[in-house]
Image (cartoon, rainbow, N blue to C red; front, top):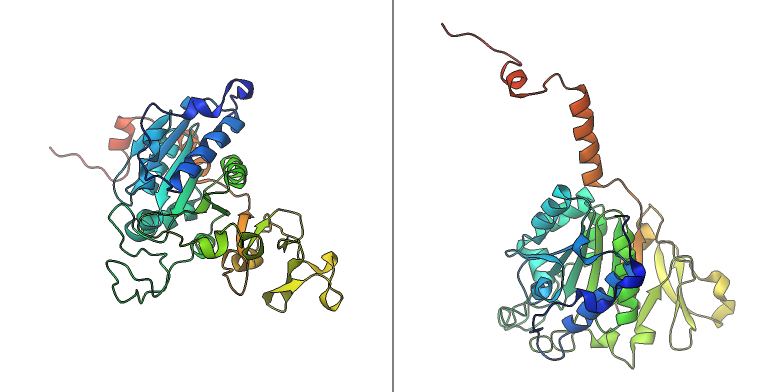
Length: 340
């Protein structure tokens, strides 16, 4: 996509005339605002965007966007978004999904769209619960969580979204908080500009069925010490006083305090989102409180060939070299015989 009219587009251009019908206080409102701001910053006409969703609270998203959209069925957003992008590579395709929609019934589609590196942007809203169907545990629910379908606590180990994406050969993974609109806007812009599958995990709050699930790291009073915003090329420093950091201790990451044992900023790891070897990025994506801060920002961003580009090149090559140019050529190719 090369057509831009950056000075003529505002977030209002992407707001539809539909009433936004999420619960008051739902984190989805902030995500919607950040996306509309990001699209305006990209300076691309709204008719160049398509928003695809599956089933869930997040999947109402296309109704609230003033561009092309498709509300699919449960778990199939990745398949639909893949088809849209392959059919029209000029579109900027965004898949809006939840932790249940993407990682349960849609899990197989999800890992394969990541593996194929189709140039779409996936926003995965993670509230660790099924909200639309009234509070059942999801594939990302913490072990032991009491819900309507786990009245004594779920005994299942949850998925780590970042681990799943990197394990599926993902080239781009980022994480943000629903309430941090400025950070989210920057991440969505980077995701849009990345050529290939971009997955952004949004730690999102469901005020009705899982309220406060991310507060232990996202709460206003604690987030500076319990999250770290990664910036490519900068030392991994965090804390209210910017006095903590991450170092590599053998094969593990370790939290240190600047000034202790002579540790200075020079000892702190520098974030490299573009490193093809995902080893450290994998560890960053899997950091959990209280041992570590939760990593936010762009964790991995590596270039790679996209599926639709390779497919288009293959079709062109076959057309240029194939002996079959029409239906008659096809019907008379291979082993044929005549019946008298």
